[in-house]
Length: 236
Image (tube, rainbow, N blue to C red):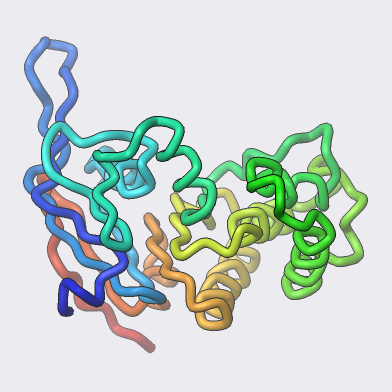
């Protein structure tokens, strides 16, 4: 991939934490990665290998000890905290294993939460129409007034996916998005992620232990001993 065509460029990303013994535990060792606009990438690896740490660094929720994250030609380390928060809200959508929906809000209200930080000239009617369209797309238009406690696990994750898409981001970061779902709901969620990636041309980076989900991505990378290696999977 030509670097000029990359949406995300990671350059020599390193990260370590202090171990209980006081020695540094190196989690990421010189990670280099390029992701194209609209590309789908799975990151797999053993528990504790640093997959979530890497995802958080890509999404600017964490900072590397060294190296650069360049997003759409912007070096994220050069942004102020306020500018970084604005960038994150507008450019990136997040999906986690736990949906993190607000129990006191309805489905529609949960989806619209990220739009509250948009500029004053953002049309709230436009945001609501987009939310309703996306909820219909994922089969939840009949649940807009429900609260999270009234939904199944798969339905809650679909709400989280719509919330991640509501600001029309360039990138979705998904950390074990099917980890809390049963097999049937997991397969449906995987299919939905791919369909929405294709429909909206949004890049997708997924951390997963589920090989059936990884197989649906265009590229799979394995994180082991702090480094990324391409993993060839059977794309049946």
